[in-house]
Length: 222
Image 1: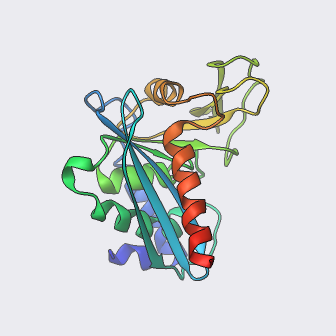
Image 2: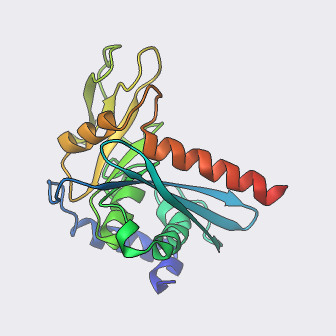
């Protein structure tokens, strides 16, 4: 495990600020062949991470991997990646190179974060993969009402800057909050979320990752 994961909060915040300067919020990728959905959960004193790998654009599951690591980092708003990052990195290391996704979708935020470095940005940078966040709730920012039709969206604005989008992926339910993580633009992030949504609120990569994380959590306790 990289030593930075154990930094005390004040130094972790400084690390975030340093990493933020390295982000590329523009399209820097080839058309993806594989897309990965990433989710994390907690089991007693361990963090569990799931990466599910799907083909794109037909969204067939290729494989999934799970890793658990001890976690001792306290819950601090804005430092979620310090709790979940080590498990995600461990799960990534178990994937053979030919099954590593070309694009990663995280259940969380990208730059729509107090310091512009949510879990999708942090891990996209460390893993050197184009990444985006798809969250169920706002962490920072405001938006205008989103029309109740699939594909409609409004800019998510924080401190006068557009950091993401409130995107309607299913009529009649609340929008999801999409933000670029690393090496992708907001417009492309929205495109890939819509291209991987199959009638549910969440896109298939993160929906399946969430489902698998819940299954592994239940198995652990059974």
